[in-house]
Length: 422
Length: 175
Image (cartoon, rainbow over all chains, first blue to last red; front, top):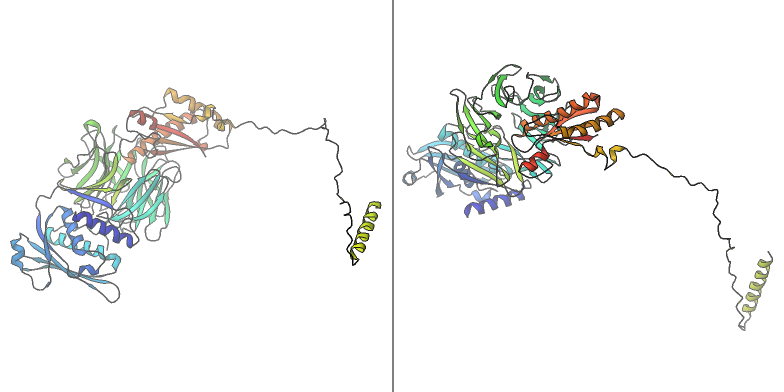
């Protein structure tokens, strides 16, 4: 019941802030292999801020599956901690903090991460934030806790983009990684597919069918400016940003069959880099800019290949099954996520360890699409379907932690996880 | 003129008489009613010629004509125009070669199974198949653009072979 109430409170406050639409619900399933027990106390005076900071931190850490979250009640004096009490509760670490309203309308959000065993401070973070950034300040604290206790950069303060379809109405939406704070980027009465975040997180490329054919656009989320990046004769699709943020790879059918091209973000200097007689599509740059992974049916059915940033010889990467598409490469370059159709005709999310060649199926559903790595490489968001409704799911790369994001009405699909931002 | 002067006389007389201190009731003068001059009933001019405008219907706009069929359907995993698609290809090719100012978009489609981008490429193959068939029959390349809608715009919303077979298609759209 508590969760539902919290959800309603957030939804209400978010609507008051003027930016929210129908919120998403998140269900969590499964736990990580080694959960770190962390006690989290309500922040002193946190009711002065529009968002309950400690509740957001608790939800983030719980959702990650990496922590066993212990409720530490209220801590009145953050300088006078009874460490033994928390150790007795089984906590290895304790999160405490304070929130104060500043004269200029901002909020002073301060937190400390304490080690209950060593009885000392592990970390602290002080932020002065405008009211509309109070949720973000909580996510940044959760990121700090995650990093200090696991050694891995947290992704709680990142954003996602996805497409919602209701009948013939399509929307490109941007939300926080937890599904809150949904904002409209584009509304259309024709389909939108393949959204892709720019490396700096300020623009999204996508394919729009508003001209009755697929055309690649880049939209600046801040000032709404739209640029047509590719509208050659035929179909234009599958935009993928180079790590520099200055150019994109796209799939075009202008030469009579679908091949991969690169083009500057302003639409100039278009040239072809792939070279096969069939279909080459779904290009994806590696983070170091040295490789482009892509889908090709040059061997008879769709498989995943890798080539250089200017094309050249392609190396085949997938060998199991006859249908492997939608390659995505983790930021450290070690893990490939993709969709594979195996016996029975199910389309499922797989990961491949590139060094060992070991693959693992990560989902139990049957119509998976569009995988997208979190920027820390630890989770994959993807589109799936249950009971004929399309929704999003998140799974940890080891397959143990699963989340489902559903919307009250309509179908949500084509997710893409945004980058780390300042 | 005569009528008018007698009217004036009557009015003047009435005015003078009514100006007397002793009101004398006068017979109201008969109201003058202007009656329209009766026209004789019109007789049809047997030499009238009333024009009729007629236009030949563009066969493209005839809902019962062969050009109303604008979809070519495909088998599963196939990108080859079937026999039942050939009349559509032939009829529209004939129209386009006769009407060189008309341009078309051929939109290729797939059923819902599989990824959005890969299906976009497969739908493109279906559009290309129809395009090639039409250019083989003499339609200039400049009159045709082959594009794909992938699986994004299904004709039939079901999740079975009956719906899927309706969605594996190329549609001819006149610009």
